Length: 219
Image (tube, rainbow, N blue to C red; front, side, top):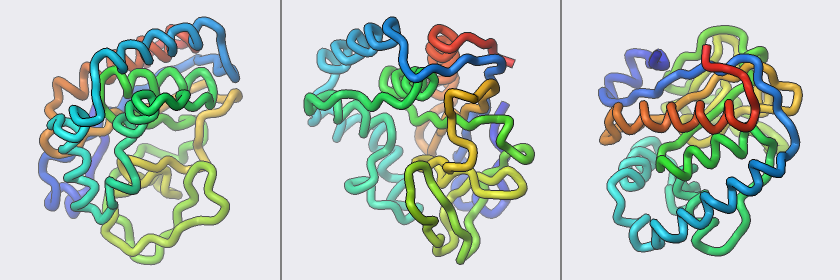
């Protein structure tokens, strides 16, 4: 299933697409020893596979950076999520530890070089829609002290009542994944020049990792 994109945004970016995946009945914990061991394996794979120079030249990361420039985001300051995580590893910094579900899909993002997002589905008012932001709309992202006021034209995702993401790099505080989350809606975030095979594979890996460490099943 693909995320709905409104006509205005799809006219600007005809190839823009995001896959929607639902996983129900998860159990989210603060941490898990098996997950920490798996993180170490992924870190070793990253270090053997990538260099910083290769990140700069890889077409998938270039596609995300090009999209960021086109929506008015400087990708040298706000890195695409998968690239930012890989850069952390290559620079010897530990991966963030949020909770088992977020950590699991972060690993899937690292392994596939595709940006992923996840929301507590029970906190959503309706079916998500990607659209252009209206000037003056406010967005409160995870960890932000106060909302930002959007200039208009940004790619955003709403649930019929509120903004839940600035696509494809910032998710909202209101529906973030917590240890109380039971049902998850994930987005496999595509941009122009990334084909659907890459998105489909990233979705499979994300479901595999999430259900491995958090249980549940794809709905």
